[in-house]
Image (cartoon, rainbow, N blue to C red):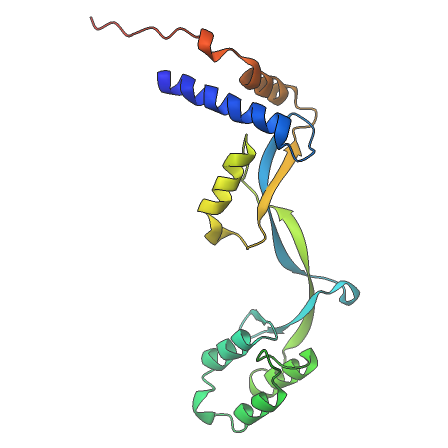
Length: 191
């Protein structure tokens, strides 16, 4: 019981500090979630990048050296099995190891992997990660640090308001204003 009271006192102190100093310009009652980013298909005029979709693989490949090496490995293109793919890849490769042009990348995949492959325009979108909710920004940051393997490198805390949620507002106000030192903990009597 004493540990629970101390937990509530520590939580209250952190919530009060954040309420005054680190509230991300968000109205109370506030809570934090994790915001992350992902690529989604879009209209071509909104595209940040184009990826090649290979129907047989049910995969998207980006125009990068890593993707090209993955394709070569997945389709066992080593040992020159498909003729001059090695020479063509080297000729078309830019300094980063991808193709100079997404259309050239698509043509290469159609020639050596699957002639039904096609380009898909994509852009980056932000989203609130489901099942995340924290009473303090500090806890949200710690969660991201401890669970980095579940998020992209761009993941960050995001403050939200529990808008028109009177019970949440009341609970948070109680947590922030209650005098936890006034609580008397009775010792259990062994009988």
